Amino acid sequence: MRHSVILAAFAAASISMLAPASASLPVGAKAPQFTAQASLGGTVFQFDLAAALKKGPVVLYFYPAAFTPGCTIEAHDFAAAIGQYHALGATVIGVSHDTIGTLNRFSVSACRKKFPVAADPSLRVARAYDAVLPQNTQYANRTSYVIAPDGTIVYTYTNMDPAFHVKNTLAALRSWEQSQHHTHR
Image 1 (cartoon, rainbow, N blue to C red):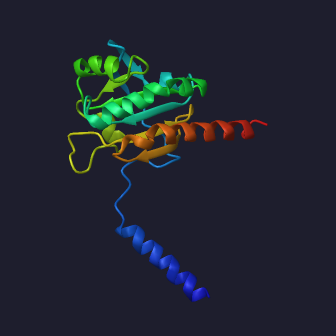
Image 2 (cartoon, rainbow, N blue to C red):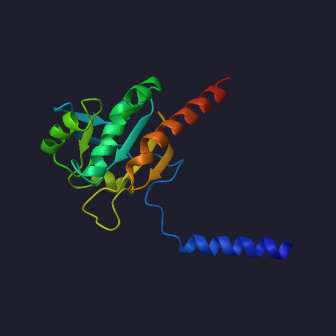
Image 3 (cartoon, rainbow, N blue to C red):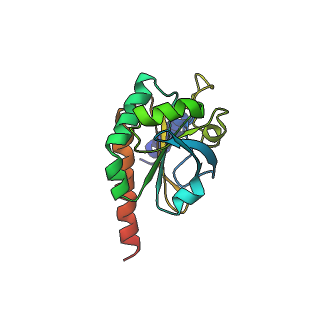
């Protein structure tokens, strides 16, 4: 019995060494602070993560490029769910390598003036969050984070398919909120 447990542990460790490295910061890590030029409904402002976290949790999502099919779908999904995020006290911010001029248009059409998108043309923010697309390092990977007000990452999800980013981040926010109610009893 002991021998099979040791073999199972060795096999699991060997498999994990062969698996690709995670393309995102781990749960429990401190979120890197940043400021970036952003657009909300075509209006440019300076987004400051520290200031946003003072208001509540932040859903930070990275996407490859504005006006591409998957990124437009994802922005529409976040816009459609923004009321649910606000009900949970959360701020949503999207980040891509696009210029602020492009994001002014994207924030109106795809984001439907519901949440801001930040310009990260040098991918400085994406690199800090390990959210650069491995197969094309000129673009951000499709990675979503939920960051608690204390700056701790409580959820991360990387998948080029935009289908589950909204559903998963909302579930993570609800789970985090429930854990806060249990902690403060």
